[in-house]
Image 1 (cartoon, rainbow, N blue to C red):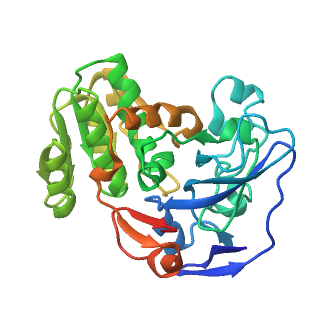
Image 2 (image 1 turned 60 degrees about the horizontal axis):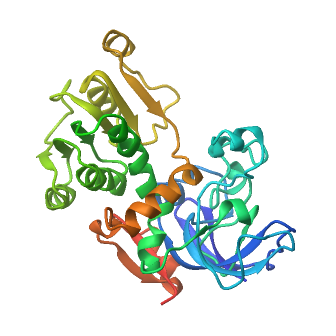
Length: 341
Protein backbone atom coordinates (compact mmCIF):
# COMPACT_ATOMS: atom_id res chain seq x y z
CA UNK A 1 0.00 0.00 0.00
CA UNK A 2 0.97 3.68 -0.28
CA UNK A 3 0.98 6.24 2.50
CA UNK A 4 2.08 9.87 2.75
CA UNK A 5 5.18 10.14 4.94
CA UNK A 6 6.77 13.05 6.77
CA UNK A 7 10.51 12.63 6.21
CA UNK A 8 12.01 15.83 7.59
CA UNK A 9 11.02 19.46 8.06
CA UNK A 10 9.34 20.64 4.86
CA UNK A 11 9.45 17.23 3.16
CA UNK A 12 6.47 14.90 2.77
CA UNK A 13 6.28 12.22 0.07
CA UNK A 14 4.43 9.07 -0.93
CA UNK A 15 6.07 5.80 0.07
CA UNK A 16 5.15 2.15 -0.30
CA UNK A 17 4.93 -0.26 2.62
CA UNK A 18 3.49 -3.67 3.44
CA UNK A 19 -0.25 -3.87 4.03
CA UNK A 20 -1.00 -3.88 7.78
CA UNK A 21 -2.67 -6.90 9.38
CA UNK A 22 -5.40 -6.50 12.01
CA UNK A 23 -5.36 -8.61 15.16
CA UNK A 24 -8.53 -10.37 16.32
CA UNK A 25 -10.12 -7.15 17.66
CA UNK A 26 -8.84 -4.73 14.99
CA UNK A 27 -9.97 -3.56 11.57
CA UNK A 28 -8.53 -2.26 8.34
CA UNK A 29 -10.13 0.96 7.12
CA UNK A 30 -9.72 2.40 3.63
CA UNK A 31 -9.62 6.19 4.09
CA UNK A 32 -12.07 7.93 1.76
CA UNK A 33 -11.66 11.49 3.03
CA UNK A 34 -9.01 12.99 5.30
CA UNK A 35 -8.95 16.49 6.79
CA UNK A 36 -5.70 18.22 7.66
CA UNK A 37 -5.53 19.29 11.30
CA UNK A 38 -4.38 22.80 12.21
CA UNK A 39 -1.31 21.17 13.78
CA UNK A 40 -0.39 19.06 10.73
CA UNK A 41 1.34 21.79 8.64
CA UNK A 42 3.29 22.89 11.73
CA UNK A 43 4.37 19.30 12.42
CA UNK A 44 5.43 18.76 8.81
CA UNK A 45 6.83 22.21 8.22
CA UNK A 46 9.00 22.43 11.31
CA UNK A 47 9.63 18.81 12.27
CA UNK A 48 8.13 18.91 15.78
CA UNK A 49 8.23 15.11 16.01
CA UNK A 50 11.07 13.00 14.62
CA UNK A 51 10.44 11.39 11.23
CA UNK A 52 9.87 9.46 9.21
CA UNK A 53 6.21 8.73 9.95
CA UNK A 54 2.90 8.57 8.05
CA UNK A 55 0.67 11.63 8.37
CA UNK A 56 -3.02 12.38 8.82
CA UNK A 57 -5.44 11.78 11.67
CA UNK A 58 -8.87 13.19 10.73
CA UNK A 59 -10.34 10.24 8.85
CA UNK A 60 -13.58 8.82 7.52
CA UNK A 61 -13.38 5.57 5.60
CA UNK A 62 -14.73 2.16 4.65
CA UNK A 63 -14.13 -0.98 6.69
CA UNK A 64 -12.45 -3.51 4.39
CA UNK A 65 -11.43 -6.20 6.88
CA UNK A 66 -12.16 -7.05 10.52
CA UNK A 67 -10.59 -9.39 13.05
CA UNK A 68 -12.48 -12.49 14.10
CA UNK A 69 -13.46 -11.03 17.49
CA UNK A 70 -15.04 -7.88 16.02
CA UNK A 71 -18.82 -7.91 16.46
CA UNK A 72 -20.15 -4.34 16.19
CA UNK A 73 -18.49 -3.31 12.91
CA UNK A 74 -18.66 -5.01 9.52
CA UNK A 75 -16.95 -4.99 6.13
CA UNK A 76 -18.35 -2.31 3.83
CA UNK A 77 -19.46 -0.03 6.67
CA UNK A 78 -18.56 3.68 6.51
CA UNK A 79 -16.98 4.80 9.78
CA UNK A 80 -15.48 7.84 11.46
CA UNK A 81 -12.16 7.28 13.22
CA UNK A 82 -11.36 9.10 16.50
CA UNK A 83 -7.87 10.54 16.13
CA UNK A 84 -6.58 9.18 19.45
CA UNK A 85 -6.09 5.47 19.97
CA UNK A 86 -7.70 3.89 23.03
CA UNK A 87 -8.64 0.37 24.08
CA UNK A 88 -12.00 0.95 25.74
CA UNK A 89 -11.23 -1.55 28.50
CA UNK A 90 -8.56 -0.17 30.86
CA UNK A 91 -9.46 1.71 34.04
CA UNK A 92 -9.00 5.09 32.36
CA UNK A 93 -11.16 4.18 29.38
CA UNK A 94 -13.85 2.79 31.70
CA UNK A 95 -13.92 6.20 33.41
CA UNK A 96 -14.17 7.95 30.00
CA UNK A 97 -10.58 9.24 30.01
CA UNK A 98 -9.86 7.75 26.61
CA UNK A 99 -7.08 10.17 25.68
CA UNK A 100 -5.13 8.83 28.69
CA UNK A 101 -5.63 5.14 27.81
CA UNK A 102 -3.12 2.99 29.68
CA UNK A 103 -2.95 0.34 26.96
CA UNK A 104 -1.86 2.85 24.32
CA UNK A 105 -0.02 5.43 26.41
CA UNK A 106 2.54 7.41 24.36
CA UNK A 107 4.86 10.37 24.85
CA UNK A 108 2.75 12.82 22.84
CA UNK A 109 -0.47 10.94 23.46
CA UNK A 110 -1.41 7.89 21.43
CA UNK A 111 -2.76 8.98 18.05
CA UNK A 112 -2.72 8.26 14.36
CA UNK A 113 -0.27 10.29 12.27
CA UNK A 114 2.15 11.36 15.02
CA UNK A 115 4.93 8.83 14.58
CA UNK A 116 6.77 7.12 17.42
CA UNK A 117 5.89 9.90 19.88
CA UNK A 118 2.23 9.12 19.17
CA UNK A 119 2.64 5.39 19.71
CA UNK A 120 3.80 4.42 16.21
CA UNK A 121 0.35 4.10 14.65
CA UNK A 122 -0.33 4.61 10.95
CA UNK A 123 -1.50 7.77 9.23
CA UNK A 124 -4.77 8.51 7.52
CA UNK A 125 -3.35 9.66 4.17
CA UNK A 126 -2.94 6.09 3.06
CA UNK A 127 -4.54 3.25 1.16
CA UNK A 128 -5.22 1.44 4.44
CA UNK A 129 -5.31 2.40 8.12
CA UNK A 130 -5.00 -0.21 10.86
CA UNK A 131 -7.43 0.58 13.70
CA UNK A 132 -7.13 -1.49 16.89
CA UNK A 133 -10.12 -2.23 19.16
CA UNK A 134 -12.51 -1.69 16.27
CA UNK A 135 -15.73 -2.22 18.24
CA UNK A 136 -14.72 0.53 20.65
CA UNK A 137 -12.92 2.87 18.27
CA UNK A 138 -14.99 3.08 15.11
CA UNK A 139 -18.07 5.32 14.98
CA UNK A 140 -20.64 4.41 12.31
CA UNK A 141 -21.33 7.24 9.89
CA UNK A 142 -24.94 8.43 9.91
CA UNK A 143 -26.82 8.41 6.63
CA UNK A 144 -27.29 11.66 4.79
CA UNK A 145 -24.03 13.40 5.71
CA UNK A 146 -21.36 13.63 3.04
CA UNK A 147 -17.92 12.16 3.67
CA UNK A 148 -16.12 15.51 3.51
CA UNK A 149 -18.26 16.87 6.34
CA UNK A 150 -17.66 13.77 8.44
CA UNK A 151 -13.90 13.97 7.92
CA UNK A 152 -13.81 17.39 9.57
CA UNK A 153 -15.29 16.14 12.85
CA UNK A 154 -12.70 13.93 14.65
CA UNK A 155 -10.23 16.63 15.79
CA UNK A 156 -10.50 20.36 15.04
CA UNK A 157 -14.30 20.60 15.12
CA UNK A 158 -14.31 18.41 18.19
CA UNK A 159 -11.63 20.54 19.84
CA UNK A 160 -13.88 23.55 19.34
CA UNK A 161 -16.89 21.68 20.72
CA UNK A 162 -15.17 20.68 23.95
CA UNK A 163 -14.20 24.33 24.50
CA UNK A 164 -17.79 25.64 24.36
CA UNK A 165 -20.30 22.76 24.31
CA UNK A 166 -20.08 21.31 27.83
CA UNK A 167 -19.65 24.83 29.23
CA UNK A 168 -22.85 26.10 27.58
CA UNK A 169 -24.70 22.98 28.77
CA UNK A 170 -23.76 23.98 32.33
CA UNK A 171 -24.36 27.71 31.81
CA UNK A 172 -26.98 28.19 29.04
CA UNK A 173 -26.89 31.57 27.34
CA UNK A 174 -23.45 32.51 28.68
CA UNK A 175 -21.26 34.90 26.72
CA UNK A 176 -18.34 33.42 24.77
CA UNK A 177 -15.07 35.12 23.82
CA UNK A 178 -12.68 33.57 21.29
CA UNK A 179 -9.11 34.87 21.09
CA UNK A 180 -8.01 33.44 17.76
CA UNK A 181 -4.91 32.96 15.64
CA UNK A 182 -2.61 29.93 15.76
CA UNK A 183 -5.35 27.29 15.47
CA UNK A 184 -7.22 28.92 12.59
CA UNK A 185 -10.08 26.51 11.98
CA UNK A 186 -10.66 25.70 15.66
CA UNK A 187 -11.38 29.30 16.61
CA UNK A 188 -13.89 29.61 13.76
CA UNK A 189 -15.55 26.31 14.61
CA UNK A 190 -15.82 27.46 18.23
CA UNK A 191 -17.63 30.60 17.09
CA UNK A 192 -20.04 28.57 14.93
CA UNK A 193 -20.78 26.11 17.72
CA UNK A 194 -21.24 28.85 20.32
CA UNK A 195 -23.79 30.59 18.08
CA UNK A 196 -25.60 27.33 17.33
CA UNK A 197 -25.67 26.19 20.96
CA UNK A 198 -27.34 29.37 22.16
CA UNK A 199 -24.54 31.44 23.67
CA UNK A 200 -25.37 35.03 24.58
CA UNK A 201 -22.81 37.27 22.92
CA UNK A 202 -20.20 35.47 20.82
CA UNK A 203 -17.13 37.67 20.35
CA UNK A 204 -14.19 36.81 18.11
CA UNK A 205 -10.86 38.64 17.94
CA UNK A 206 -8.14 37.89 15.38
CA UNK A 207 -5.43 39.57 13.29
CA UNK A 208 -6.39 37.82 10.05
CA UNK A 209 -8.76 39.73 7.77
CA UNK A 210 -10.20 36.68 5.98
CA UNK A 211 -10.95 34.84 9.21
CA UNK A 212 -12.56 37.95 10.68
CA UNK A 213 -14.87 38.21 7.66
CA UNK A 214 -15.79 34.54 8.01
CA UNK A 215 -16.39 34.82 11.77
CA UNK A 216 -18.78 37.71 11.12
CA UNK A 217 -20.68 35.59 8.57
CA UNK A 218 -20.88 32.83 11.17
CA UNK A 219 -22.63 35.26 13.50
CA UNK A 220 -19.92 36.45 15.89
CA UNK A 221 -19.16 40.01 16.92
CA UNK A 222 -15.73 40.55 15.39
CA UNK A 223 -12.78 42.71 16.39
CA UNK A 224 -9.74 42.83 14.15
CA UNK A 225 -6.61 43.16 16.25
CA UNK A 226 -3.89 45.56 15.17
CA UNK A 227 -0.69 45.37 17.20
CA UNK A 228 -0.21 43.72 20.57
CA UNK A 229 -2.81 41.85 22.57
CA UNK A 230 -4.43 44.11 25.19
CA UNK A 231 -4.07 43.31 28.87
CA UNK A 232 -7.70 42.21 28.86
CA UNK A 233 -10.95 42.49 26.92
CA UNK A 234 -14.51 42.76 28.15
CA UNK A 235 -15.00 39.64 30.21
CA UNK A 236 -17.01 36.54 29.28
CA UNK A 237 -17.97 33.48 31.31
CA UNK A 238 -16.58 31.16 28.62
CA UNK A 239 -13.33 31.98 26.86
CA UNK A 240 -11.37 30.11 24.19
CA UNK A 241 -7.69 30.79 23.55
CA UNK A 242 -6.31 29.79 20.17
CA UNK A 243 -3.77 32.58 19.68
CA UNK A 244 -0.75 30.42 20.50
CA UNK A 245 0.99 33.50 21.93
CA UNK A 246 1.83 34.02 25.63
CA UNK A 247 0.35 37.52 25.45
CA UNK A 248 -2.83 36.16 23.87
CA UNK A 249 -3.11 33.51 26.57
CA UNK A 250 -2.62 36.11 29.30
CA UNK A 251 -5.25 38.34 27.72
CA UNK A 252 -7.74 35.47 27.45
CA UNK A 253 -7.35 34.43 31.07
CA UNK A 254 -7.74 38.00 32.30
CA UNK A 255 -10.82 38.32 30.08
CA UNK A 256 -12.51 35.34 31.75
CA UNK A 257 -15.27 36.35 34.14
CA UNK A 258 -15.41 35.42 37.83
CA UNK A 259 -15.88 31.65 38.18
CA UNK A 260 -15.68 31.36 34.40
CA UNK A 261 -13.91 28.76 32.29
CA UNK A 262 -10.98 29.33 29.95
CA UNK A 263 -9.94 26.61 27.50
CA UNK A 264 -6.76 26.84 25.47
CA UNK A 265 -6.95 24.95 22.18
CA UNK A 266 -3.58 26.23 20.94
CA UNK A 267 -0.32 24.48 21.73
CA UNK A 268 2.26 26.58 23.56
CA UNK A 269 5.58 25.02 22.65
CA UNK A 270 7.80 27.02 25.01
CA UNK A 271 9.33 25.10 27.91
CA UNK A 272 7.44 27.40 30.25
CA UNK A 273 4.63 29.88 29.62
CA UNK A 274 3.68 32.44 32.26
CA UNK A 275 0.05 32.55 33.38
CA UNK A 276 -1.59 35.05 35.78
CA UNK A 277 -2.18 32.60 38.61
CA UNK A 278 -3.04 35.25 41.18
CA UNK A 279 -5.81 36.65 38.99
CA UNK A 280 -7.11 33.13 38.37
CA UNK A 281 -7.04 32.36 42.08
CA UNK A 282 -8.70 35.59 43.11
CA UNK A 283 -11.56 35.29 40.61
CA UNK A 284 -12.02 31.52 40.75
CA UNK A 285 -11.20 30.82 37.10
CA UNK A 286 -11.09 27.24 35.82
CA UNK A 287 -8.57 26.65 33.04
CA UNK A 288 -8.57 23.64 30.74
CA UNK A 289 -5.20 22.74 29.19
CA UNK A 290 -5.26 19.45 27.30
CA UNK A 291 -5.82 17.77 24.01
CA UNK A 292 -9.44 17.22 23.12
CA UNK A 293 -10.62 13.69 23.93
CA UNK A 294 -11.78 12.52 20.51
CA UNK A 295 -13.54 9.29 21.52
CA UNK A 296 -15.32 11.02 24.40
CA UNK A 297 -16.98 13.78 22.37
CA UNK A 298 -17.16 12.45 18.81
CA UNK A 299 -20.58 10.79 18.99
CA UNK A 300 -22.10 13.95 20.48
CA UNK A 301 -20.63 16.08 17.70
CA UNK A 302 -21.85 13.61 15.06
CA UNK A 303 -25.38 13.90 16.49
CA UNK A 304 -25.24 17.70 16.42
CA UNK A 305 -24.08 17.56 12.80
CA UNK A 306 -26.77 15.05 11.81
CA UNK A 307 -29.40 17.27 13.44
CA UNK A 308 -28.24 20.27 11.39
CA UNK A 309 -26.96 22.18 14.41
CA UNK A 310 -23.36 22.25 13.23
CA UNK A 311 -21.82 22.37 9.77
CA UNK A 312 -18.01 22.30 9.63
CA UNK A 313 -18.38 23.50 6.05
CA UNK A 314 -18.83 26.96 7.56
CA UNK A 315 -15.04 27.02 7.23
CA UNK A 316 -14.97 26.43 3.48
CA UNK A 317 -12.28 23.79 2.88
CA UNK A 318 -9.83 23.48 0.01
CA UNK A 319 -10.75 20.07 -1.47
CA UNK A 320 -7.87 18.23 -3.15
CA UNK A 321 -7.64 14.71 -4.64
CA UNK A 322 -5.57 12.15 -2.73
CA UNK A 323 -3.15 12.02 -5.64
CA UNK A 324 -2.16 15.65 -4.99
CA UNK A 325 -1.70 15.20 -1.24
CA UNK A 326 2.11 15.50 -1.25
CA UNK A 327 1.96 18.93 -2.89
CA UNK A 328 -1.04 20.17 -0.87
CA UNK A 329 -0.04 19.01 2.63
CA UNK A 330 2.25 21.99 3.28
CA UNK A 331 0.33 24.55 1.21
CA UNK A 332 -1.56 27.36 2.99
CA UNK A 333 -5.24 26.66 3.69
CA UNK A 334 -7.46 27.30 6.69
CA UNK A 335 -8.84 23.79 6.16
CA UNK A 336 -7.57 21.20 3.69
CA UNK A 337 -9.57 18.13 2.71
CA UNK A 338 -8.26 15.17 0.74
CA UNK A 339 -10.75 12.96 -1.08
CA UNK A 340 -10.62 9.89 -3.27
CA UNK A 341 -13.31 11.46 -5.46
